[in-house]
Image 1: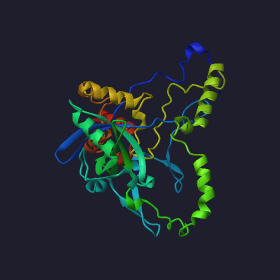
Image 2 (image 1 turned 60 degrees about the vertical axis):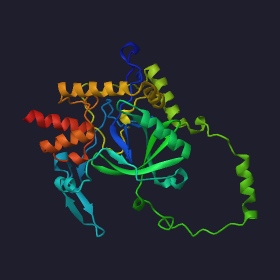
Image 3 (image 1 turned 45 degrees about the vertical axis):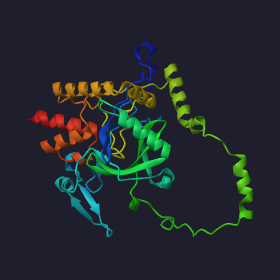
Image 4 (image 1 turned 120 degrees about the vertical axis):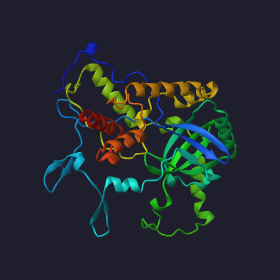
Length: 352
């Protein structure tokens, strides 16, 4: 049941900002130029509601078999390719691994196009790219050239055993990456039953043009893009927290199972509530030495504590964890999140 907790025993619901962490690194290449970069999500997780039991325990997600009316253990879950007739062809982990794209950390730019040539329908998610390595000269030059030309570089690359199509572009002196949908993933207007378009007479559109001109803005304001509902939810939660109303604490022994990732492309948890753009600008001024020192420190911690069972302190990338899980024969690894891989590896290591 909800309870009125004493303020001196409760931490504020919004902890201090933490530093942003890169979740993937690679090298942009074209011609004889190589630009090492690190990926940072460009977005934060918004205000959200968790599903809890009445005593405050976060609910876990389970796989349920309706035929046997029982939960299915993750180790017994298999994947199947659905055919048009409703049948499934089972695909094993080793078969998936055999057809995985070749692992590489190169983002090979094959062509450059005008930004306006890329339809927004292709856009998936955006990321900031920070310079990596001992120098950032090539990074600065590439960003400046791309921004002046208003062009984007198109490439494919492999991240966590999955191939992505990406557009590399520059804005305010900083490189960014937008993952794109492949062409065969898009629906056409005909696919959704839209009628054929016809050319409208200029006189018929005059009133609409005048209305558009009256509402024209020289610049899109950030205030117009704020999530007002999320702000209202946050204000409501903080108000009730200050009053000690409906505040519940999860039992100490409760461990919530990590939710299934809806997209392997998303590693939003790697980003803390900090100004990433300013951090990248500072690294450009500093020549990249701080970033290198941070990575060396992380590597040293991993050598000293290779089997840490907490994804927040385990510095290995998900790709490295996947390879370790593959070596240990962990089943269901291709469907696991980073946290689940860390725990599965630790569990398998303890058995040995």
